[in-house]
Length: 253
Image (cartoon, rainbow, N blue to C red; front, side, top):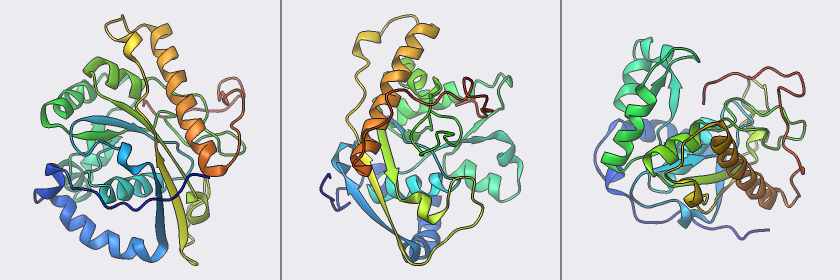
């Protein structure tokens, strides 16, 4: 079992500058702390500055808050790709835009916003959290299922470090497919950060289906191994494939 670590580390310049996140953090963090305490493993592997794509596992609807708070505690400002329709909601849309979240159209929408957003990550040295599974895992025991190529494409096209991560314990706060939070007793959630996925041999290659599939498989293997460390268990030899198991997948990324 990996040893726990404290999340104390230097803040990045982006977190030191005033932003809407300061307001959100002042509201959310005190309430969140009543429900959740974190255990960080290898927290130093999240870059203190510069662009990155962070790819965690996904098995609860509350995962974005879990990882968003974790990244904030580790000194970086969390950014996600969110459904474009959310940006049209009054107040919610304003908060999403001003906090740097990225709108993504449904599959087939043809939006180039993710590409432009990734370019901005490089220019401004920002990080992005992308769930490579695209939706909650269907794997019966909550292991990562087959991934989509969005995270590796963003990393490869823009030469951004692709960092795998995993969390465990979130299911006690909100079960998979659950709609209600179970805040008491206070839950412990473990978060582990991995080494960047080595994609050096794929740099400069044509990003065809075969190349993207190879890179995605490496990423999902890394996430599964990290989750195995947290669970003190061995991941399944093959990842759950929703298509093969007659499951429905949603989500572009």
